Image (tube, rainbow, N blue to C red; front, side):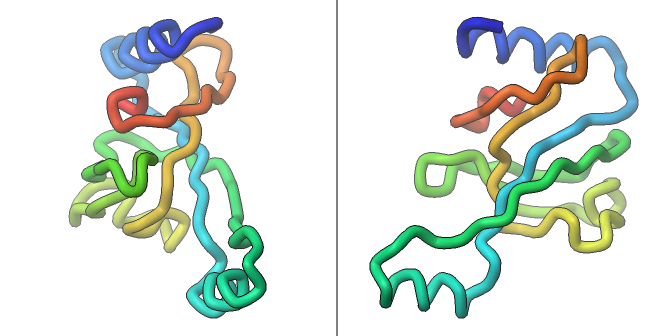
Length: 114
C-alpha cells in the first residue's frame, strides 16, 4: 500500500473477512530503570520490538498515548489476557499485518490499527 488510506483499508478488510487471527508489532520500553538512565544520559530510551499473533477476540482497548496507539486495557477472556506477558497495558502498537500477503504496515493512530 502506498498511502495511509490504503493501509487502513487493508486492515479493515482483514477484520471484515473473518480472519481468525490478528498480527501486531508491539514496542515496549525495557523497564523503568532503563528509562531513568536514558533521561539522566539525555539519550533515547531503549525499546524492544516484536511481533505477536493472537486469535480473535483479542480483548484489547486501544488509546492514543503521546501521539501513538497503545494498549490501554487488556480485558479478561480475550486472547491478549492469555498471551503470557507478550502484550501488556502501555505497550505501543507500531504495525499491523495486512489482510493479504502478511506484510506488516506501520501505524501511527488508533484508527489505523482498527
